[in-house]
Image (cartoon, rainbow, N blue to C red; front, side):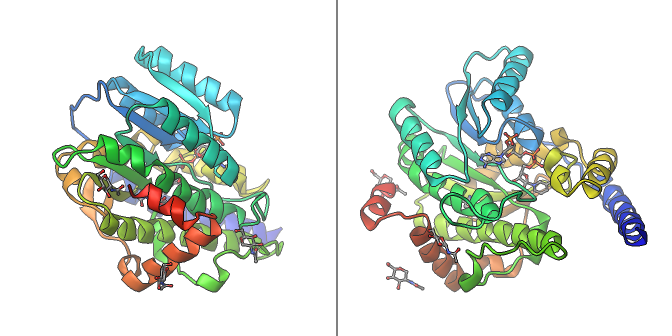
Amino acid sequence: MSLVVYIITTLIILVLIVGLYQKSTNAICTSRKRLDGKTVIVTGGTTGIGLETAMDFAERGARVIIACPFQSEGDNALKLITEKTENKHVVFKLLDLSSLASIRKFTADIIDTEKRLDVLINNAGIGFANKPVTEDGMGFMMQVNYFGPFLLTLLLLPLLNKTGTISEPARIVNVSSVLHNFGFINLDKINVTKYWLPMFGFWYQVQIYSNSKLCSMLFAHKLSKKLRGNIVVNCVDPGYVGTRIFGDWGRILGPVMIALALLFFKTPWYGAQTTIYATLDREAGKVSGQMFKNCQLSRAKRSAYDDETAQKLWNKSISLVGLSSEELEQCFQ
Ligand SMILES: NC(=O)c1ccc[n+]([C@@H]2O[C@H](COP(=O)([O-])OP(=O)(O)OC[C@H]3O[C@@H](n4cnc5c(N)ncnc54)[C@H](OP(=O)(O)O)[C@@H]3O)[C@@H](O)[C@H]2O)c1
Ligand SMILES: *[C@@H]1O[C@H](CO)[C@@H](O)[C@H](O)[C@H]1NC(C)=O
Ligand SMILES: *[C@@H]1O[C@H](CO)[C@@H](O)[C@H](O)[C@H]1NC(C)=O
Ligand SMILES: *[C@@H]1O[C@H](CO)[C@@H](O)[C@H](O)[C@H]1NC(C)=O
Ligand SMILES: *[C@@H]1O[C@H](CO)[C@@H](O)[C@H](O)[C@H]1NC(C)=O
């Protein structure tokens, strides 16, 4: 019991410090750009940061596609966005990033039915996995946060490529995290699924979360070199944001963290600002493979720009998500 009190006290102090820091980093995106006639996908645009991001794009007139694994969540979010923005072009589609089959179904549907795709926001992510392994045999959190979006992005490249021009590039924006700073890449262990140690499980998951966010940045770096200027790909660090992402931290820590996060962290609206900035700002459209933070160009950890690691991770990711070389070629045509 005293251990729990100790942990909670430590958390409160940490959260207070972080919260105070947040007050000085609440930059907002001031762009007035409209998005009429443009199509945007926000993965996980149903709650938290993603919902605020989708809401903003809908207000600007975009056709917004939100996607998550639960129909009811999607229906609720759709209703919320449509009522608030009166935008009739918002749709919800099922997408479960923990299933490669679901990702393929989703992207095939998009490629078949959408004429254009201007923006892809890889926002969906989890901070804690309740299951160790996905149906595809990969570590659950790694697949939802990294391998899934990896496949999704590659399969959508042809449509993004068709839509983007040099003067107005299509944009891919990934929601990364400060925690990428704690990430490290060990390719032999990138697919480990045995982290079900009860005592250390929690910290292990925080580590995997950090690793997954570092992978996103390495991917952006690598992908940016393969693209030509009509598609830019960048990451954003939203800061610390009060959302449900902290809710899965267990029966005691979960509610405590949610309460603290809601009290002291950024609101999801503020949390969405840097994503919106990276999507709309003219200058932000001129850089690729970079990290934005607090509505400004920032820098990820040094190892996030390591070409060799990026190449190895790329190869490993291709084989884990099961992309054949013909398919890969098609992604880049
Ligand atoms: N909150 C922070 O402090 C913070 C800090 C840095 C980075 N981030 C990142 O910001 C992003 C959004 O997080 P948030 O804080 O807004 O969390 P959130 O409120 O928990 O939202 C996460 C979203 O991802 C969706 N999602 C979860 N599992 C999915 C799956 N298997 N397939 C497809 N979609 C799935 C969720 O859909 P359902 O609602 O249907 O589950 C939800 O819409 C994440 O990538 C997170 O890592 C957050
Ligand atoms: C984000 O990461 C996913 C893989 O995690 C990748 O598919 C996507 O292109 C990345 N985008 C950026 C901007 O890093
Ligand atoms: C990655 O894969 C490509 C093509 O399959 C191969 O030519 C290259 O040597 C591989 N690189 C690494 C670092 O494994
Ligand atoms: C790694 O992922 C593949 C799926 O591509 C799976 O078949 C394999 O069992 C996984 N390996 C481990 C050690 O979990
Ligand atoms: C984009 O399309 C052009 C022209 O069709 C093609 O040459 C190029 O390889 C494509 N790039 C990507 C990243 O798909």
